[in-house]
Length: 292
Ligand code: NDP
View 1 (tube, helix red, strand yellow):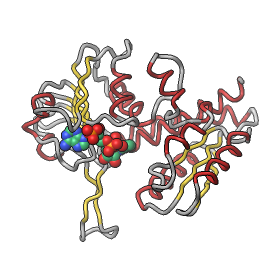
View 2 (cartoon, rainbow, N blue to C red; view 1 turned 90 degrees about the vertical axis):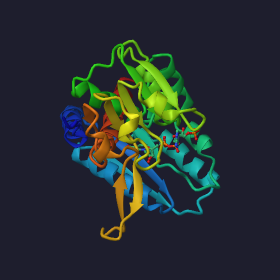
View 3 (tube, protein in one colour; view 1 turned 135 degrees about the vertical axis):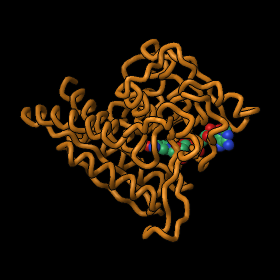
View 4 (tube, rainbow, N blue to C red; view 1 turned 90 degrees about the horizontal axis):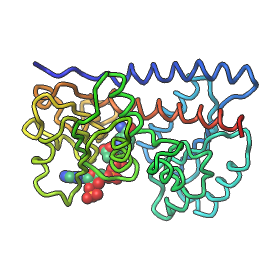
């Protein structure tokens, strides 16, 4: 039987609607959550992500401060901008869209953002607090994956989760979160140094692909009945599309859906959840600023 398709788009809409209700309560207290969205350069994928994020913030009743800077912006200029935003009490969150141009040190920029405004959850203070289970902003994509599973009623306790990819923004934090007691999963993280990748992927009760390699997870790499979460977003040239490309995940969707019990599509799977969790974190930042 073909897998159940996990409708990330609808689940994300519900999360955003829930946040929107809480925003109304804040508005009644005179607070409008505001996220500064900083984009350096003109990377088409980044422009599209930033536009999607700003639209979602507006729909939830929040403000976004749209800051577009030219490609030649220096590291010092960007640090100066961040310093100003850090000090501005009407700005609750700061998002610097990655990747940055090569001449700018991403780590230096991320570390310059005040942890209380780091709604991406990338600052070492937030990463450290997440690691030891203290309150912190959770990185949006891993958090979105967990909310998807929870909403679908998919049990993680005692399950073997195999994650392909060990980046700081997806694979590693997701692995850490799955080992929290509330999820109680056993985790294997694979990367390009993994020998016999398909041996590992076939052990997975829940398989997460976050490698950035189009269609690399094929049906023969998946245990029948596994839950398959495709984080990958890859742009494939496609002359039949107006944009000249189509999006595809890291999973061979057509083949794997015949083997898996549940599967996320690309698009409309994990992607919308990432945005929804960003909106959620911006609300959290605004609420925390009132209590501070
Ligand atoms: P990175 O390029 O930072 O990391 C990719 C990881 O996958 C690395 O750890 C790499 O291993 C591993 N990897 C790549 N190819 C293979 C392979 N053939 N076998 C085993 N491991 C492999 O990517 P990100 O984590 O930033 O993103 C991953 C994907 O998710 C991309 O397609 C990205 O666009 C997408 N993405 C989607 C989001 C969403 O909202 N849906 C949000 C963020 C990312 P090694 O470390 O050894 O190099």
